[in-house]
Image (cartoon, rainbow, N blue to C red; front, side):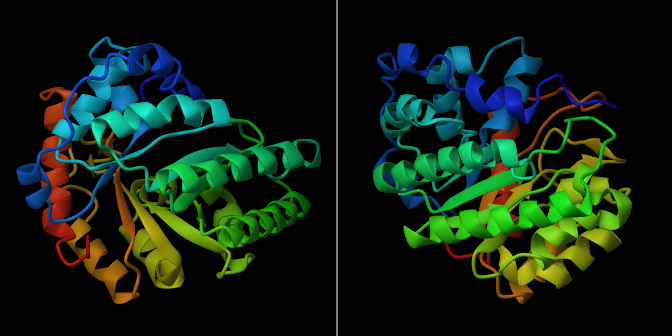
Length: 318
């Protein structure tokens, strides 16, 4: 049960590789007034979703960025959360987003925060991208999932590395906050090994005023052995720090083609999050892996997912 062979490291740059070449071709009109009037809740989507759905169709989302971003907009989704590595990535993407009328309220940056040899470069890149994104596109949230020692590897960070990483998150969060951007810590499953020591220290060991939380509900669910008990405990522990939700579903442990009823009780999750006082930014991150049904186009899958998200999270303000 393996995801399609594309990682966050690969998608951070590849969605933008063809942006310069395609920007001139982006001729689709902005959303109409009637479309805007029908919005009930702002939804965003992560670029990873579109890459894996396009890959399943034998297409390259980055090579067809004009078509891809038009699909995003046609899916009743108003926002796009890209993975960005450099200022050049941001500058290539900016005109494409504006042509399509898509907001970029949040973005994802990779980071290496446990290694002193990589730390300053990683922090500098994240801060530079965040500052320009705030100035030019009004970005409010920067999501980061500090890199493991090796993606897919068995190595775990030492206590000293975990302490250093938490200190670096505090430093990054303070700097971003100084110009109006919120840092949101994100995790995959690797951080939940060994009694979830890395995951918990990145929240329990950081300043809540500087480091907030992007809850990726399904990675917490999967990383804790497909446990809703663990997922809802995380909400009870850290719910007040949730500023963003990544939304994905599964059926019997396998990623679903759409967000809908399944292994995670999303209506209960929405209620639990709202009870903490959090009012998170919602980002669809539906994805496909071995065993995921193949019945819908990327646009159709996101349309259905957006409708379900708006139903479940109807109590959220826009």
